[in-house]
Amino acid sequence: MRLLVLALSGGRIAIGAGLALVPRRALAALGFRDASPTAVTISRIAGGRDLIMGTAALAARDDRVRLRSATLANAAADACDVA
Image 1 (cartoon, rainbow, N blue to C red):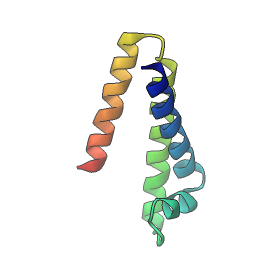
Image 2 (cartoon, rainbow, N blue to C red):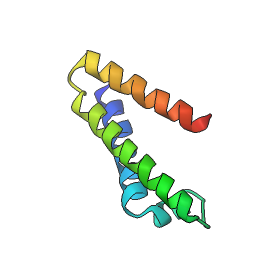
Image 3 (cartoon, rainbow, N blue to C red):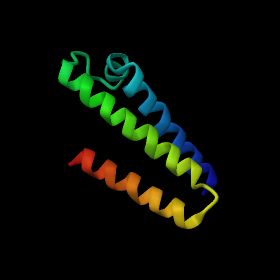
């Protein structure tokens, strides 16, 4: 479980950092070549959220209760993104 948490959290932090710090490059890497200013702004917001959520999950890796809450929060955020 710890390895999965580290991998998922690391991925979320990496993607979040890209979206927040270099949104146009990150969006292009994700297949969005023509990013409007609105897309860049939303990208920065989502990137910040992912940085926080990835860090929270990583910080909770040794506490089962906190880790469960962080994992459910991450899953809920991802489900909302898909919807």
